[in-house]
Image (cartoon, rainbow, N blue to C red):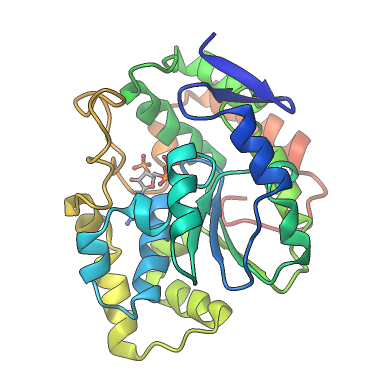
Length: 283
Ligand code: PPS
C-alpha cells in the first residue's frame, strides 16, 4: 500500500511515517525564536522559504545561492529534513504543511512565530494537479474531474484545504501568527516583505528589502538550483514531466476547469467557508 492514513489524513509511505508524525505532534519542541513557514501544499511554500531566508540573511543572497532550501528551511514532517531541523542553529527556519490538529502541541506554550500563507484553493489544486505528475511512486492525478473531487473531499495529501484553513484561522488572535496570501505576494511583494519583517521584529533597510524582493522573484528562484527543486533526485521525481517553478501566476485554474467544474467548486467552497471569520482576495 503506497499510502496510509494518520488521524484521517492521507500520507504516502515514501515520505512520511506514523512515528515521525506522532513525534512531531507530541514531542517536538518549538523554540521561542523559531520561525515557521506554514502552508497548505502548493500555496507558495518555497517562495516563503526564500523570502524568510533572505530576511534572515538581511538581504544578502549568498545563503540562498549556496545552501539548499531544504537545509535552510527544512520541512519537519520529512524524516531526513527533521534531522536537519534538529541540528540547525537558532534562530531556526522551519517549514511545514501540517494542519493545526497535527501541529506540534508545544506551539500552545511557545513564542515561535508562524507565517501562514494561503492561496486561492483553485490555484493550489491546479498547481498540484500538474506537479504530482512528476513523482515516480505517487498515484498520478487522474482526470481533472477525479482530482478535483479528491481535493474537495480532502482525500489528498495533508487532507482538506477547508479544514486546514479553518483550523488555522481559529488561531488568528494569537500574536505569534501572521496570515498572508500568495495573491498579496504577487501583487505587492515589497509591501508584503515589509509586513513580514515587522511581524518578525527584523529591521531591514530599504536596500536590504530591495535585495529580498529581487532575489525572491520568480525568475531568480527558477534559475537558482538551491531553491527550484531541481536537486530532488531523479529516483523520486521525473523533472521532464513536471517542475516546481511552473507558471507562478494566479488564475491558471481557469485553464484547467470547465465552467461546470468551476461552478461545482464554488458551491463546495461556500458550503465549507460560509461563516469563516476572515476574507480572502479570491472571494
Ligand atoms: S510545495 O510543493 O507544496 O512546496 O509547492 P509550493 O512551493 O507551495 O508551491 C509551488 C507554486 O508556487 C509558485 N512559486 C512562485 N510564484 C511566484 N513567485 C515565486 N517566486 C514563486 N516561487 C514558487 C510555483 O510556480 C508553484 O505554482 P504554479 O502555479 O504551479 O506555477
